[in-house]
Amino acid sequence: MESLKRTKIKALLQMEPGVEVLAKGWVRTKRGNKQVKFIALNDGSTINNIQIVANTELFDEELLKRVTTGASLAVKGDLVESVGGGQHVEIQAKEIEVLGECDPMRFPLQKKDTTLEFLRSVAHMRLRTNTFGAVLRIRNAMAFAIHKFFNEKGFVYLHTPLITESDAEGAGDMFQVTTMDLKNIPLDKKGNVDFSKDFFGKKTSLTVSGQLEGELGATAVGEIYTFGPTFRAENSNTPRHLAEFWMIEPEMAFYDINDNMALAEEFVKYLVQYALDNCMDDLKFLNDKYDDGLIERMRSVLGIAFQKVTYTEAVEILEKAIADGVKFEYPVHWGTDFQSEHERYLVEKHFQKPVILIDFPKDIKAFYMKQNPDGRTVRGMDVLFPKIGEIIGGSEREADLEKLEQRIDELGMSRKNLEWYIDTRRYGSVPHSGFGLGFERLLLFVTGMANIRDVIPFPRTPKNAEF
Ligand code: 4AD
Ligand code: MG
Image 1 (cartoon, rainbow, N blue to C red):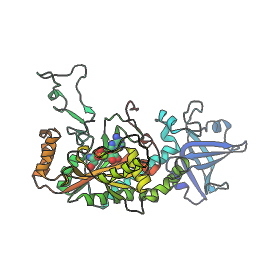
Image 2: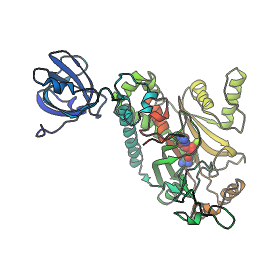
Image 3: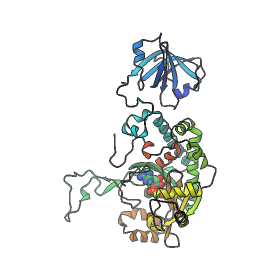
Image 4: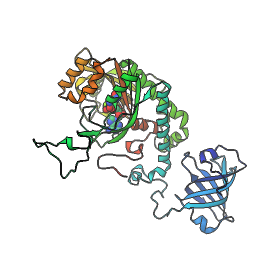
């Protein structure tokens, strides 16, 4: 059998009949009668299975008994035109080898219809399902498209550190990194933890954002992007938050907030278009199985310009909605951060298109955002999407040394730890901007999955870090 080279199922399904082929994969289903068995084989290269037709006269009964859902097979046979509907070719089997058996009494993915919730409880096996195959292939296509987009624009892929001493967002929800013996923590004379004894000789954490280091890159080579794991120890058990997620953070010298918004809009539209152009089989599967509005919703964001609205205008819209009887769980008034219910009202009900919110109260945004002349707002931008809410957060950066230092002081942050960052404003400071796209939030949009735990292979959330 091994003299023949294996062909992946995606390629087999596009070939013309009349050749001998070798396929390998996992059994999805087996059905048939005394004379013939039909085996649906999948190898992950596509959502579609190849049908194996096994004439029972040719095969030992014992062998066919071992062909159960989940078992892995190598099948040699002739690729022939399919008589049944559904596929254009199938394999008339001549040799079947069971590579790995799969005990039907114990295999967790026996039942045809397993809920996503159940699959989370067998997360080590759920990757074998059609659903997760589709999600993983779309995830892969999106990662590739992200690199392609920036590469075509001449951006430099910058690798920012995962272990850092800086709390970029100033929100404080960081995972500490230490090699100290937690039962015997070294203390200094004042009784405080003596981090000089720790591995790095200082207090370090997992990064919440690569932005600040990204700014060092952008003010050196012009335009960079990062794409890496990001960690937040916020205790939010929502369908939109992970403790470990992936973020794409472009940072561009000489871009103002308008250039930044234009890039963000072009970027997400490019990714949605790329998914429609390259992942249609998987999208159709997800559309049929979970979310019959998926493909339509994806198309709907492409043809139109995103709606730009200031935070202040958005508050007025929401206050008017409340006056007109719309109920929200959380209150809204100028100065509060919007909840996802407010974001979704603006996008889905009021404007019925993606929204870019700008000019936020400075007190709800990070220290690095450019201050507006009004003294109370900053040049931040959040891109809000249907069904998701915030998918991108970004801003023009405060390029003025004095204003930046003043804001750091106002917020009671330590300038000492940020000297390296402040140096970008001391030496050849330039206007610059950037944003962060949450990779899994994007994936929620392009897969139609409702829970962020279902678009990352190994989710990390409070009290959950399997494998
Ligand atoms: O809005 P955020 O916090 O912005 C930043 O981190 C900036 N430093 C980005 C920049 O300007 N370079 O996060 C950016 C995006 C959010 O819009 C959201 O899509 C995603 O990251 N995100 C999360 N995704 C999953 N789980 C979480 N806990 C997330 N927190 C943020
Ligand atoms: Mg944000």
